[in-house]
Length: 320
Image 1 (cartoon, one colour):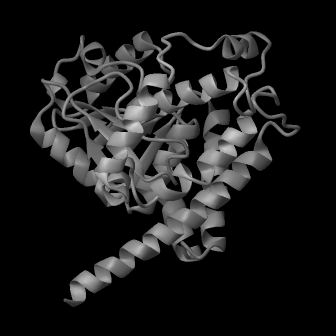
Image 2 (cartoon, rainbow, N blue to C red; image 1 turned 30 degrees about the horizontal axis):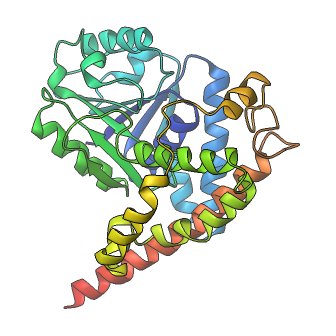
Image 3 (cartoon, rainbow, N blue to C red; image 1 turned 180 degrees about the horizontal axis):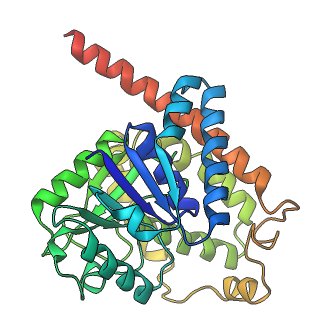
């Protein structure tokens, strides 16, 4: 697959477009407004420049990547002759269905249509589709050009050839794809994340710890370990007899609420939305620009380390 279309130029769309272009794909990115495309162009260029500064790309590779990306507000122009579509438009079902109808009237039957959604199941996304077997979910994580994981979600109508082709193209662009055996609300990562957030929120409500201290604790423990050793492997290394005792002692006292915490509802009602309003669990004075820059800088350092580690391991394997 050489020709890729990304529908949507927001945070997820522009980051995914950058990834495909870095991997040598011809990319067309489509948004409804020219201003959105200009912003996407600026963000992609700045992201690539930082990678050059960190010696993860050369100047030549930066220019080649930028030259592979075409920007357009014309949907037909964006999808004509494409091999793979990543739909990353707002999470409004009717808008998605209308877009899919246009797509299927233009593209070939071999074109894969993927959605970045984490909201709608494939059964809903394909309820008007002519060829539901070529629809799939590829769920990227923010920022998509840096976070390695992509969750690939199929349903009973998805062709296995489509699953394999999607898996292959995610590997080609440097991702670590995981294929869910069946569709489930929240997929893998968000289910585990929400379970952890429920307990973190519970600790705050009970006055056990502040938001800042919870962040410090998790960054210095799970955040440190899970980058290279996931929760299941961690328990193997610790010993499952220890895990059994820990789970047995603690699980009965964990929160099992099914409600959104009252303090979180109040924060949203007071327009304390995080970086969008300069106040959330923390206060900001720049709409999170410094926080995002710092986060991405750390992510790039970790990504560079992971790539160097993988290259070293591959070199060792190939030399044997």
